[in-house]
Length: 410
Image (cartoon, rainbow, N blue to C red; front, side, top):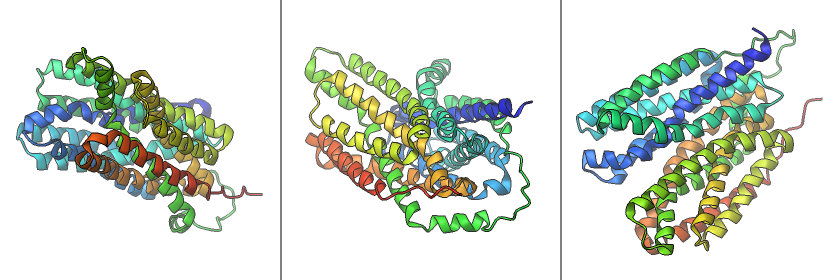
């Protein structure tokens, strides 16, 4: 097998693994059925998703630190297995009406599996493509963004119909599907063969990585990544009801079912942009540079959120939503190569894993901030959310201006 084909095979199987893991973003599809099944509040059920994202980031940080020790194949296989196990436990929890076991299964165990599975193909593929880091890492994480679309529009509806809307059976089936898809894909991952140069490294990668994690540049990158994630997640849960409100104001004769279909369509289309944004911005960063592209992502969204404050046209609202999701996904597409450019490829797995803890924080802060605004300013929740998001993005853009790439070696 030629090296060229081998590295593309690894990139494709890494994308397939991410596609499987990205089904976690379809949680909202099960939100209302789970609320009905448990007879509890939306916030109680939503903690299953929040915990999954939280432990995703924490496990990704640990995985980045230990990638060289255990190797990509072992970590990816463990991640796929744990994510499937999380669905199995969630199915048992639903059958037994236990929220605690839902949190433990889908949230903690499934989230750890997500983190180990997510960081591994991204860091591994970046090593195989030193000439196209942005394009290929963007392609790999694009799979994660598209996972929700496939789950919500294809897999979940089929399983719900097949099981007669038996949620526990749906999660059991998902466990099997994840095992069948993720484990063979994970088994294909491997490191680039080591090249002996005869020159000892002046600084051990582990020591260099720990020094990097204590640097001001790392803190700045973590903060701008956290801000981009937070504003995206704040918005993801708002898009459907806000579109429905605009449509109802424009056409009061529309039925609740028609409004719901319109909201679901927007979720599907914006999910597509979430996935494509990872590839588009990642590829663009190879041409323009990662720092400049990340600044464009942040600054352009300030203008978009400012426009959303006054927009009343449903179609224009939908266009702006898709752009926000394009940028949300773009942050994930650019950050792997951005990390390599800033700190060096030798410490990229460790530093990138650590920077994904921003995902954990954003996954909690974003929804909680949105919930606070909705609870206390119900009449102006949408506008205030957009204003807060625009202000956060301004802070992120200002922080990004303080970042400079490390000088290239002579």
